[in-house]
Length: 623
Image (cartoon, rainbow, N blue to C red; front, side, top):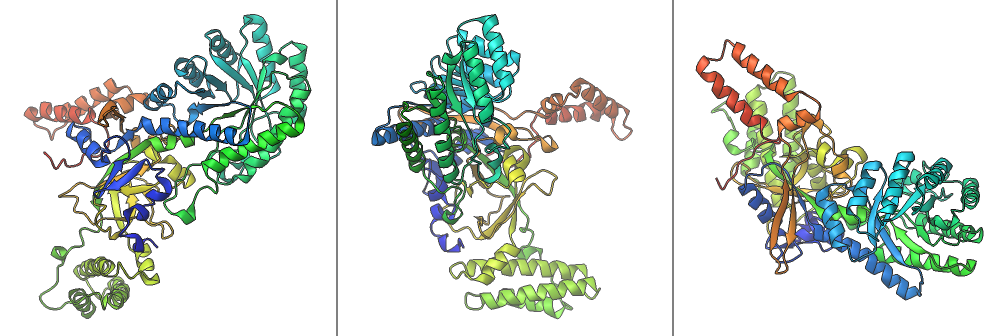
């Protein structure tokens, strides 16, 4: 259940399952497994010493670059193993993460590879044209108008290796018109095919006949006729399909490759002699689970690349056609690992339940309250389970007596405090003796940790899709965590909670946050979370920083982008911030409860707050 793993924090928090060797636990700290292995706590405290408060988003570009190189090396290995004659190329889909702190170092770190960007909108296409290295591929997916297609022609004139993927016959007709207007060079043309094969999981509708994108077989033949009619057959270079993000099962992909491989062969036979590539889209899954038995995928990257290469070689041989260049658009696989959200714990909600908060009466305590106190005083490892059961029974009885008016509020407060103290002490005493009863208690009575972040801003897929993310404390990992934990964010929304799950439990340390800092790390948040994050309660993107490593293994904190201040957030929502300031000044001037000599001081204090971000301010214990 997890209690057995308290002595092994790597297994307790699943680092061996999801970590991909990017992070390690050493000396009780989570460390970056690169260079001189700095700890995340050290990086965090260094930033906080420089005045950056609230949650922090730490980017590690070397991890994203490593993932791209892993993808290329595994495909090259598989090609060599199976004697495959086609090439391998890839693009990163900008929809997954368009932030410059990610994209710019990714393109710089992969410039020696056939690696580019995929765009699905005009703005993304402009980014792709600016940051893709000349000669590396650009693919353009999604619905397009004349203007977007014209931008694609301009990219080709700039020397970019760009492919416009057709989602409908009308887009091909627009390309034909723009070719007549703008002339050469004409971008390469791709055809997105609507497969019979469906996807699986949440994004299953990305594939199959009812999918949003792609050409049917009839439309593929119509497209070929149009290309031949306008002498553009030589520009058709790629077919493309995508069966969904985060594929947890390899079987649908294998079926889709067989179907796409046969379509590729048939189109070549109809005259598409320059059709040389199959783009298998994205979907290569990331492991988010912290437990092996709850794995998010049933395959490895080795199996994924082997299956793709082997199947396309087999189909090409059986159909007598050249082996196609393999394209992928894996985004989550590349981006997810590179970013870590670090957020400080602000409060443990049961810490008011301490011995000093007891208000026992000199005489006249109800018998059950007195018995609870006796249970707590005499609790030991031999009787802990029995006394825990007794305490929970007594609590139910005493709360009923309160509802009926037989005990007062002081008695109820003593009941709550004593029961929490007994639970806390029992869990420690029974930590090496897991049982169903302890499981039930942990599920029923967790510690609520208030964490300085917004789930809606930083983990929107948790709220919207119930997507789990690895979470763990960043230090104290050489001591046992004793509290089953649920996490509350600082939004005023009951959905802003990472609830305790007995099947995938989170255990944290019992810390006094008034005396010491306690940081949690939320891992694998680099894909989709930033671009989908919403400003619920007007909480904005956390302060971000890029962690770059020197050749000698030391690190630099660079490209710090501080979270927006309150006025900037309001300005983004089209409020006239000057008008807001004017109205506040007016209210201060007209208030009868403010003395004249106070007005300037109050206004100055308000301006100070307006210049800060909206996250809560926490104590810096170094000050």
